[in-house]
Length: 338
Image (cartoon, rainbow, N blue to C red):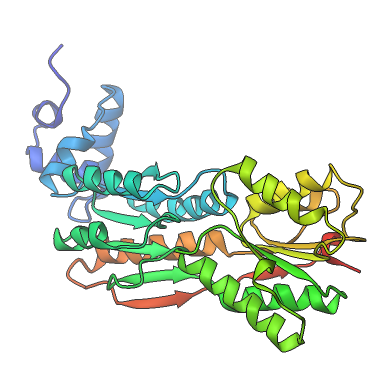
């Protein structure tokens, strides 16, 4: 049997290959009756279009590169779900890469994507990313790039973030209102913007309260879980331990729960905890964890809509250089209540 392609379908239907192609692509130029004939024969012969060949003709890969710093964080999974809910409608698919919080890995991914074919890049930078030189190359090659959550501030493009400063402030203020007088802040990185904003919000609430703040109240953690556990354990055992903890990322809150199991300390009687987190199981922890939940799905949807407007609707329109803030929500549960 001859190879089933557009030319073969056209010969059987006595149509021009261009007509068959437009019918398969649901073009408005083709009548419903003609589309029905073409689709019926394509189905009968089990015709499978070649998406790569189609993308070459359209000068589009129909592919969006997505770079995230880690997969275990529920926030990033929810952003991807929101993003994909939009891009699938337009026939685009995602290539998702994990930088593992490693800036060198992030650079390799960028280089790979520039060497291949992607129509755009959406990313959240690693905790080690302090320079934007490798990111500037993306725009220099004419590839749209937008950022979410952890952003490169000096790249002129749209950046989707949440109100990290205000959320850090409100989370800390909540602990103060619950009677905490020695509140520690668990920080993951000094480089990323969200960490700085959350810390600054925490510091504002502490300063306004008149608490006797010390630099040692801010614990600078790393990507190594064992070291983080040892650092948190060392903090919790002394008599002058903290009575409140605000965690800048969910994995540090989980580590805190694990460490507390080794002690006689109880949550929230002895230590009250609030964490930035999008964990769906926050209610199932013992006790349920108070969280500052980022609007992950909304951020993903907003990223997708912006890119589809650029790639499918108004191709000549530049992406604006702006920061769009979508607020987070504080969910108060038993872990932080007096």
